[in-house]
Length: 453
Image 1 (cartoon, rainbow, N blue to C red):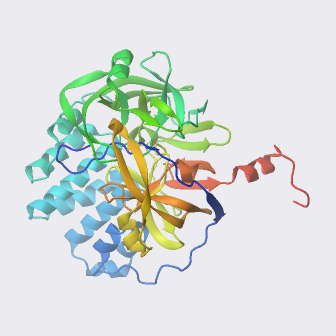
Image 2: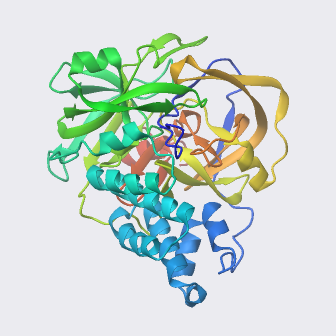
Image 3: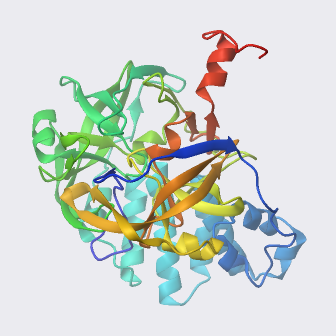
């Protein structure tokens, strides 16, 4: 979401609007070379953090090499690493210390904005609004409507409802288009289909859906949303009292509301496709998810909000208000890809190509994609590129090359990558794990073993 501000992109919902090769091969994930020893040092630590080497920077900050950093620099880096690793509560103290020791206005604005993000993810919207005001006073162009919305939390406790450990299992619709749709009950009204969209910073509804479902709008809380193709879209902000998924209920859920027609798409394969809304990552982070594309099933478990997020195998990080997955490109470590269950295609940015020194994209036969607000854009493609996460990598015959934009980093992991696997998105451990569905069925005895297997 933007108000000519700090680049809060709300949604990366996207559909392929014309045909190109969707051939791919699944392989075991192998790196062509290891990361060099001493990758991070006191001279390049900020640059390496910006490049996505978050675990390596964290390791350096805990080593004796970090003693050469002055206290303000160390606190700033420590707070930013903790924020991106999802440890929002522990990120705040070092960021506050760094802010207190910083005099330059632009640096103070950045630190206050980090603090606002930490509070936003923690569900402390009032604190997020307070730090957003500080960032605004220091020169950050934070949308006024966004701050008004954050300040409206009052006595609401975000995502209350059923206790930790509560689970649900729901069938999903997938195909024509290739987006995961599940039944969602809002404010006790009849269920409506919505897309599970980890690429959206916030859950979204259309105006007509909001009217049916009883959204409580916040006066003056309006802003501009930016979708996949960087098109400005007017958005009102508000609250719903409850969201029910299967047997799980969450209360006091923040939502953005977009004009009717914004979530309407038209493609050759799917025809006209209208959405009522999406469940964004701010809600999704409250649960661990398992998605079986082959079985058309989504399962989730409510997280204990007191538990510190992260693990030694962490490969999901929060950056610019959205989740990024650590991936290899052509076996080279490491790149950051937006983890986007709300995008049909997977993509690479031109910046991602530059950082991994891959060859130039093909100018002929551009791929056209459609995003929210019926925005269309034609981008190039590149052939025979391998993207790897966890135990597997996918070699695409063709993959879209997206123009650079804040919040996307090196690429997008969309359904064209994820749908070949059983996918576990664990926001507690901050991990993305992939499993071969056939191997899972063989283990469970659901299909006979092949001869000699």
